[in-house]
Length: 406
Image 1 (cartoon, one colour):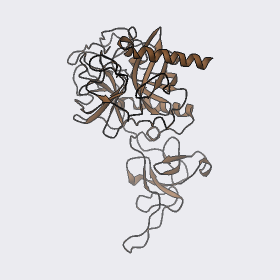
Image 2: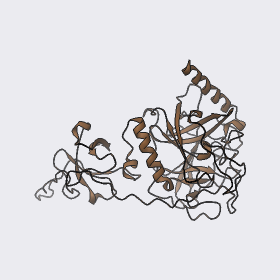
Image 3: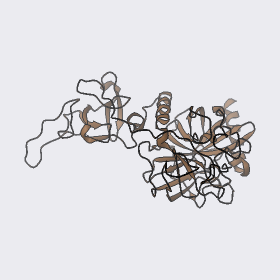
Image 4: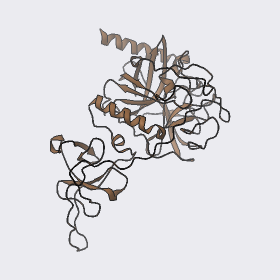
């Protein structure tokens, strides 16, 4: 009976969204929360390839609303805070328009079906987390939603957040979302727009855009709130916060500013879901760790072979002995050491876990690194600096006021 009631509720939510209008946005009172607009990815096309991008549906206080979110780990979604919390003002003045506590987690379900319907695979939320530093709408427009079950890899492969490299002016990105079209009507499908360009990087956009934000080019409308800006490699570099009433001048929160928030929550999500945390969580990097030479080294050009390094020894120049791989958790191959190749945790010494790295599986410290020369775990290299925490300004570009995206 409980399962039937759950499916009935989801069916009603999908039906409400299919009607379009106010129900297809993100506001505390009219189906769309502050930070969205009155329209969708303008000039976009139907998207069937970005399976990490989800429709996030909420139902609370008799209202049904939707936003977009991105899967960062099997049970972890990234979205905008205004998609999960009530706002105090329709027109937002920085410092005066706050966001309340998140709605109950049971208010939210998500699906990555390109054309959501009652029979789509839905995943229920069990926790919602937002920054604790402030409730001001300006600058805190980011949220993480933990799901009650892991999304199978056959349904979606998580995206990687680019937490260590800031966007650059002129850099190309792709916008993906479930918003309405430029006429304000729901398309019923996930949309994408490619070839967009970063207008300015955090800290250089001027009034109305905070140091934790950047401005994009075009095309973000109602329901696209919380959706990603994806770089050329498909990594998440931003989260839609707001934009103009004509779906122009979109402002994104940059993921680099929230590196610690993302990593800390992802660790909890991994423990909850029973899986090894993604590499970006354990390394603080957005590129996978380097396996310099998993097969060991040998001489070349008739030169005698260099003695292979043993476990815990530096190996960038020599390679490793049999059963070991040359590995580093940093972007610097010269820091690589030999670590044990494994097929399961039983192969690893105490404190290490067998973790997939590229085509290999290696015994690694779950907090990052391999084993040092004493046989202890190797601490990860220094993590990239976190951007200074500034807060998102929801106002008109050039002013400190912007009409919230409804």
